[in-house]
Structure formats: structure tokens, C-alpha cells
Image 1 (cartoon, one colour):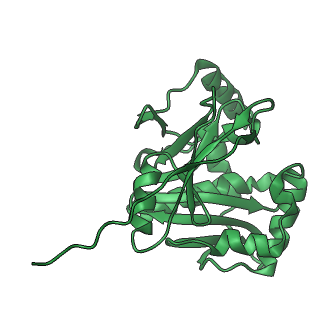
Image 2: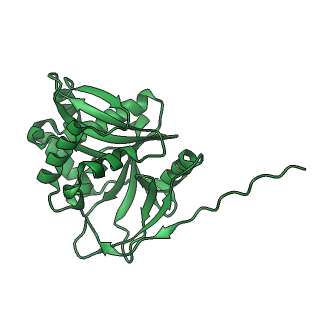
Image 3: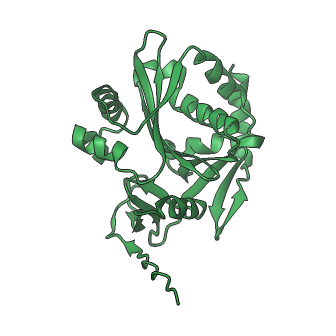
Length: 255
């Protein structure tokens, strides 16, 4: 008689309440679990399809009291239609050299990351990260991960995107870029590149993390259409509000 080894129980924990980093006056709590061992990849895939995100070797999802503003969002790659602004961004950046690199932190990446934090998120916790903190963010991963580097024709690093490979898509974990090149809209271009790369890999989705409609820092994610949001245990089409349609029409008319 043969015996199967008992499955290791999987535990989920709830974090202590903290101030919300996106919406003033609200409280943040998360449910977290460890990603480890031979099942890390498959667990990460299942949790990502259920609205979780990865940080280091931890998967997490918001369970904030009296608030559901953080909504998981993903792009439907095969149906994606770039708007006029996004087409302009793609054209402006077609001279960039883009390469997927292994998840190994470099001093060059860290210096760009530091500048980005100082200029865009100086009031956040990440602005005080040391190189060792940055290295942990990049290298502490139990799954297939890469750093997509964006360089000018002269080789200057101007952007980076920490990216996870999932069974059904690519997940943009964190991106940073040179804010001195605002005319290039490098954050938008990084997402456009991931969409094209997912298409080439025959992957149906690009996961963008959490969309927070009330937060200016996070609301941009809804501009990549069509998208789906995770509500009530299922992925549903993101329905545009009429005021969003009118605003996009104004943006298109400006170009």
C-alpha cells in the first residue's frame, strides 16, 4: 500500500490596519499568504485570477473595512484598441531599446528608481528604500519574473518595469521611469509594450494591479480598453461612465 504525503496546509493572515496610501482618511487592511515551494507558480496563478497581487514572496489582496475602492483590473489583450493618445505615445517611443532582463537589481536601475520616487512619490514609504530594499523587491520572487528595461538609443536607462509571467498573462508589478522625459509618457508606453509582448506570447491578459477610481495616481489604468475588473468573485467588463467618454473625446480633439 502506498501513501501520499499530506498536503501542507496553506494559511492566510490579515494585516493590522494602516492609513490608506491612496485615499486620505481611510484605513487599509490586507489578507496575505506566502508563495513558496514547488506550488508557488500555480498558487500565484490561481490567486492572480482571484484578484491578488504579489510583493516579494507574498500574495495579498485588500480587505479594507467599509471600503472597496481598490478594484483588480486587467486588459483584454486580443481586443485592445489604442486610443489616439496611446498611438502617439507608441510612435514617440519607437526609438527606445527594450530588453527583458533577469530579476537582478543593478545600481543603474536603483538610481533611476530613487529619482522617480523623489519626484513622483516623495511622501511615500518607497522614497526611503535603500539599495538592499530595492534588491529585495526585485530579487525576492518565487516565480518567473523579469525586469523590462527601456533605454534611449545612446544606451541611457530611462525606464524599468518589474513583470511577472502568469499562465494567462503578464502582470505589471511595479514600474518606474525618468520623469524628465514627460513628453514620452513612459509609464503609458511600458503598458503598451507589455500588451504587445503578451500578444506575441499568445497570452490573453495584462494585469495592472488595483484600479482606484478616486485616486489620480491609480485612475489612469482604466484608459486601456477594453478592460475587466474583478467584482463579486468574477471578472466583468469595465463599463465606461459617460463623463469619461466625454473627457476622452476632448483629449482626442487636442491632438
